[in-house]
Image 1: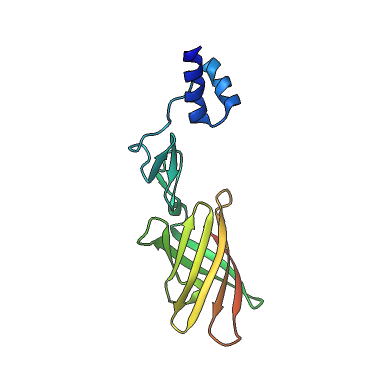
Image 2 (image 1 turned 120 degrees about the horizontal axis):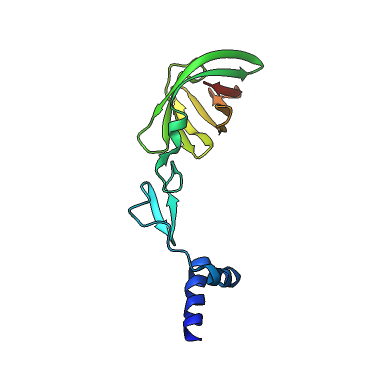
Length: 166
C-alpha cells in the first residue's frame, strides 16, 4: 500500500490532478519531456519548455520573427486614401525585434516586436512624429494585418489600416 501511495503522490506532483494520477497508474507516470539543455530559447519548467519572448515550438527552437522577415507588398488605407508600396522587414537586436523600412512610404525605420502571431509597433518618436500600432500574422494566408497611428503633433493624428502580403 505504501508503494501505491508513493506512486500516486509522484504522479500527482507531475500532473497536478488526482484523477489524472490514477489514470496514469494504469499506464505509468510519464517522464519529463525536457531538460534545460533541450529548451534552446527557453527554460524547462516541470518537464515542459517555457519559451522566451520571440521563441516558439515544442523545444523553443524557432524564432517567431523568422516568418515575417523579408520583402512585403503593403496595401495601406490612411484617411480614406489607399496606397500600395513595398517594405522590407529585417531582424532587430533582440530575438523578437524587427525593423520595418519604408512603412507609410517614409524613409524612416520603424521598430516592431513579433511575439507568436502578434505584431506590435511600440510608441516611438520618428523625426517630428509619433507612431504606434498593433496587429497580427495570418500564417495560412501569409498576411500581416496592422492598424497603426501616426501623430505629427496637434490634432492631425492619422489612423491607417495596412495589409502586408508576400
